[in-house]
Amino acid sequence: MSFLVAITAWEPQPWIDRFRGLMPERRVFGLGEAFDPAEVRYVASWKHPPGSLAALPNLQVLFSLGAGVDHLIGDPLLPKVPLVRVVDADLTARMSEYVVLHCLMHLRRQRRHDEQQRRKIWFDDRFQPGAHEVRVGIMGLGVLGQDAARKLKVMGFDVAAWSRSPREVEDVQSFSGESGLTPFLARTDILVCLLPLTEATRGILNRSLFERLARDGKLGGPILINAGRGGLQVEADILAALEDGTLHAATLDVFETEPLPAHSPLWTHPAVTVTPHNAAMSNPDSIAEQIAEQVGAFERGEKLKNVVDPRLQY
Ligand code: NDP
Ligand code: OXD
Image (cartoon, rainbow, N blue to C red; front, side, top):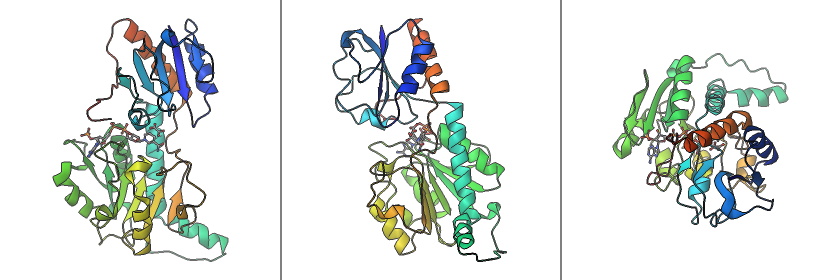
């Protein structure tokens, strides 16, 4: 019973080595190696080449090596077996670090201080708002959104969130569904997107949404932070909204095309902070161990955890 590690866009070897160490009784292959497709029972994927998993007749479970599964669901030839995603304390903590860092960077206008330091300008910015005066709105109140919401509360931000179905998190005002979106946006100064990419969410971060954000906040205009997926955002709309003041600034970790092409104006826009899709990296140490445990449990007849609902696509 072999295990296939199908990774592009990351270095596969640390994952292959880790799986081999955890499952010495199994043959673990990388995509470039020769293997018998009939032997493969499990696949762990991060952006496998579409179609490359189509002819595995005895495949039983597909594991995503990330929390998101759009890279798998986007493959029209994906085998119809249970799809398991990552829920991992280390990954969750990293995402919250990212969200808190960038909310604080915008609150404290750190990009402006960086620029002033470069130009040796002593600008004494005495009139900074407090975190409690800034309304953060999180799109997606799942595993990552809930943790980020709690940690933003610790910093004092006024936090609300929006999800598909109603959710409750202590001291976080929650909105849901189509009808909840407009009131949620109307009270949001910093919009943090932690949604999955699905048919329902593709392109949701567009001009019409930006126009519904609060205009009476303390940061000079609405700010967007997207660490969900690039397919959620319309980059031409972000750039136009930054030009005409509909958006004041943006922090983007994910892009329509990754790596972000050199010709993208986002690289050099003075109001945009770009990070290379590393808000919350998957750690082979903890994640491979969880997957190996799930394989063992599955073979003992136990239920798989964190299985994706194929109708919802997340
Ligand atoms: P979860 O599945 O736990 O949460 C998803 C949340 O989004 C839920 O609250 C869900 O609503 C909500 N949602 C889904 N569809 C809709 C919709 N149509 N309308 C409104 N809300 C919706 O996912 P995670 O929190 O674990 O991860 C979220 C995403 O973060 C991943 O899918 C991935 O794309 C991204 N990610 C990015 C990383 C990076 O490094 N940049 C790292 C890790 C993840 P409900 O609660 O009702 O189900
Ligand atoms: C993920 C990611 O989905 O790293 O985990 O993007």
